[in-house]
Length: 161
Image 1: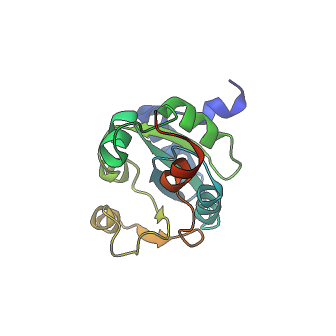
Image 2 (image 1 turned 135 degrees about the vertical axis):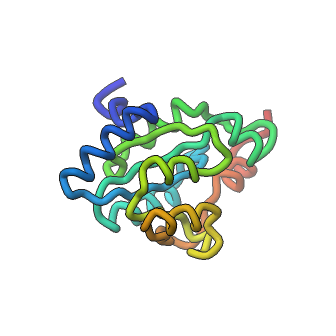
Image 3 (image 1 turned 120 degrees about the horizontal axis):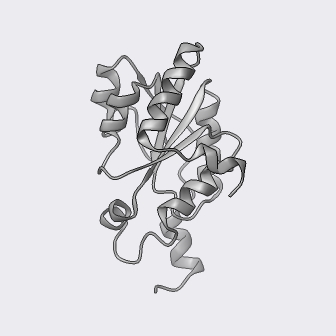
């Protein structure tokens, strides 16, 4: 594991980094997802998050949560590896794996300036919207049209296990 592995952090490490970034006057942008099979839609989504300005923090769903969300046979890639791949991207400043069904707890812990979600949501349909707004943050929709999907990619590219 190289330099990028240092971007994959625990919740406690993330809180310390976030506090340090905030003290330096930097904005915090929280994103989250399964990121099971990384594709161009993910890259564009994360780039859109970075364009908001500040440090991009990616919450990655733990394996059990992905299984509950996507079904048996998922994730195809374990959480630690998904996190490491995301950490290698230039637009990503920190990655944390979370076990909860949504990122409300991370929103409470980090109080991000922005919570960036993909175009499969609207600012009103983001599950954590109320929590973000309650802490003074803003929900922002970023990335390109939802023309890419790990689920669809897996249907075409790989047979079921």
